[in-house]
Image 1 (cartoon, one colour):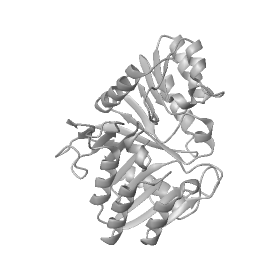
Image 2: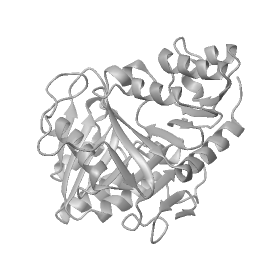
Image 3: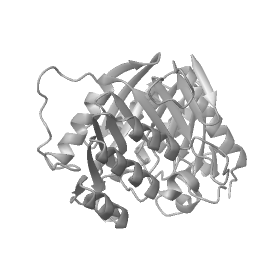
Image 4: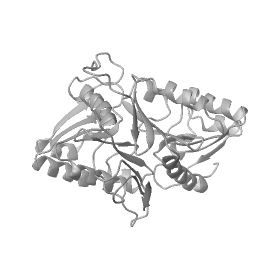
Length: 337
């Protein structure tokens, strides 16, 4: 079952937006729509409030006073709250969290700790493109996902512990060895087949390229940053064999030296520039109306080789339809220059 209320899509949910009742919930921000709820910030706040034992979060940035307040409230009621952050985004909100007794570890490597995920009570995973900042939900176009799955939670918790406990970031060696049974990468959640991958260890660019090669009818994408020659070449090869390829680039970086935007335009791809006043911050690919790739991973070599990132590959026509609606909204308002 899929239930839609405003911008929440809850599969197998008892109530739209109820983070404890559904297996999957999707959140899309709507910049400028002040009465459009729940936003990704609403969803994350509710998830924090649902925590009973633990909240382990790896976020590129947390500067939302509202989210900080919910984290501190969770700490006060006895929830074990631990955070991993990108060093370069530390600010007053993080200092406040630390004064409240919340343990924070910052990435000290040359790449970015660019994740935006959390694991709650060892059962629920939160991830997507949404940074926990005021602009993340109020000004920028973003998506976030909540998935109730012990199998996925185990994978994400392993990645969190590798950073928080072992201090392993980016492409340095020394990752956490598997202990006990091998964790399954694939899980069935609310009828959707889902796989999780982490950069740089899983060579995510290669994973996406392989999925693109399997496209039969169409590929749609929303790209905050797209400088990957490999992924662009895969899409151009698809177009030459008759697959429809279309996408929206965030305007700010699309006309820079390394962007793939002009290559696509020259090759006749329906590539457009976002017209939103804020940032079009999605990192989404939709293949054949049934496979969604989403997460923190920008389509760049840096994301693949240097940063800590994650993606989900979701095989579900129901989920894909909701992402196609977001694509249609942004594509319809976008321009070619």
